[in-house]
Length: 496
Ligand code: BES
Ligand code: MN
Ligand code: ZN
Image 1 (tube, helix red, strand yellow):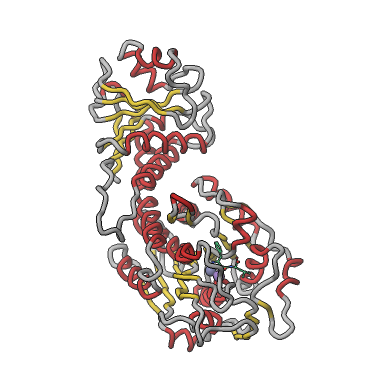
Image 2 (tube, rainbow, N blue to C red):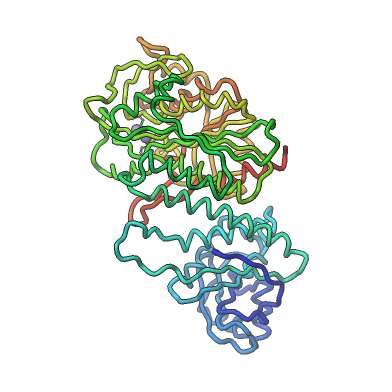
């Protein structure tokens, strides 16, 4: 997707399609009013005839309006004027893009960012429009023998009424293009099947990404993991024919001695459950169990494209979780890299086993903060559904930062408790702790488990089990939480 900004009156803009907002009760946005005046009141007449009610998500495509230079005018409903919520703005933008997706229109000039969205500036509106558009044109065709045509829509022009707002709109679009590319990368990796996207494939992709985006990259093999004592991670990998990989990426945007932010992504390229085998229904979706890893790659790509003045390290423990004669069994006890012993009561609680060693490995970077991202628990989906990710943190200030980054990016998270009371549930009769805490508060006890390995730095955990992909007929990876992570990194970069 290409982005640009134009300062022109909407009726004068020469293009295939110009999109403007209309509201309920026949109210017009400033841009719609200006088109209406040029076209002799046609838009107003259409609204008073009752052909369009202006509700969020409604659209009308009009052709060759007199006095209007653009070939088409797209009316986009934005609900009740004058206050548009962030959610309604995004929904309207999505509907506007969807309305022209099956036409041959290659360029959409949008004046939607001219409406006021309380608390959000022009950069936000331009960025969100760009991200929504990039999301809408995304297709995953890599595995089909007959590819459908790529979407015609390839350019978004932000129509701007006043020159003053142009720099902000341009900045928002620049961010949209970097974040959008990170989201698309994460979606692609998530959508690939488990027989293609193996731990080795993830490692190759990290190496491929490193060159153009000037990232340092290092891939630790099984022998090196053994030397480091990552026996929790290796206990998951040992049931699989695929070699585990521990991927380390460095983005240096600040002086070397500045403490980095460390992002840790769960990279289980297929989660069968292991010996505690999962039931068959929807097991295919466990190819998405590496979406945390994919979001780390997407965020690092974006950080580099945005040239953020910040150091960021990406850590990806990558493995399959498979049943076999060499797999871990319920009751097995392993010693983690931290020295703590873990009783594996359920081999399907494998995410925390690979993350705990990555969290210990993170200590060597003396990080300013560590954020892990994982499709960790089905319980989180039960608690929060598919709207927001679960957020846990050992520092309230870090939690607030991520909450606000999520709200800003509209990639929201909800703060969950990490109280000591829950640690009880992880007690083991035979080891320092058990890898499961029973049915109650399953997402919380998973986070509590991780917290035992994140004692040396500020740490947060995002459980993205409900947000990383969609099921059903639109099954596919969402690219979340790349927008949240990049927003968080952008704020940290400004702070430093
Ligand atoms: N990858 C799954 C979590 C998951 C399940 C995400 C379904 C999205 C949908 C994770 O490895 C897992 O299997 N967790 C178990 C933990 C349990 C054994 C304590 C779960 O959630 O059932
Ligand atoms: Mn599992
Ligand atoms: Zn898993």
